[in-house]
Image (spheres, rainbow, N blue to C red):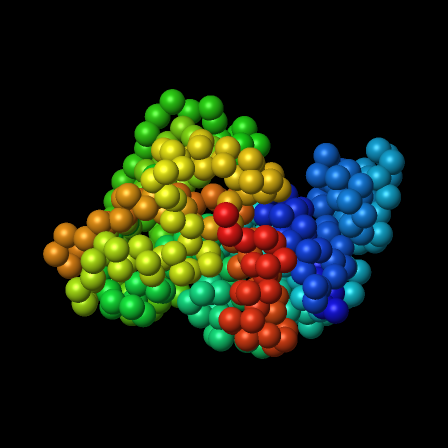
Length: 337
């Protein structure tokens, strides 16, 4: 059984920890927190070994009655691989720690791409991460675009991708990012950082991205236009997407008209925290005009990278191929609506 440590137990880290626990070939070595908040208390309540991410703060945990299993260096030493789910920039600072213990590490999309040799998406480039010491799991938006681009490129070829990303202002718990009453070009110049980030997965892809930030917390929404190399009908594209395990084509009969309904749908389906691991593509939005494909998709920024982190664990430890890993992850999580 692979021993997986999670350094950072916030929005992403706690979801990855739960996902690791659900996998038949993994065990959670523990999680690391910087401070004794409600998430630290829930980690202990879940039976997850809790480690202090900052040694100087050990006493803070003791002061509120939270028992620690040790300090973060002990977690790294006992782990076969560490998922670094710390805030942007902290992962880069932690890289030396992982190298000290010769422990492979996964970083999140908030880290600079040049921190590692390989940026990762399970559907697109699993093999490039096999046996790597340091891998970056790309951001929620890049994950969503990569999952979409990979099957289109394989089936029809791509001349160019143009995407406008309507981005949530913050996650539900990120009160420091709001409230806001504005719609902000983010950035005001072309491109947004998402296009160059997608090119870390598809180096030869022609892609332009624009970004807007809006006062919402539920999902990102993408308006996508793909110029295809080969002719395709909307029905053919829809069939293609419906055969992809991490793309959910929203049926017209479901009455899902926006991100709020998607979240409610996920909660009613019994998803933990109402998480949506799949891209959600409105079926009726899929249209082809000439060689141009158009669609809208929603990306749940809190959870779509979770299965990717699980697959990246298997890639760096070389225990499964892409197809087997994706299938195993999906089954363990209960992927698919």
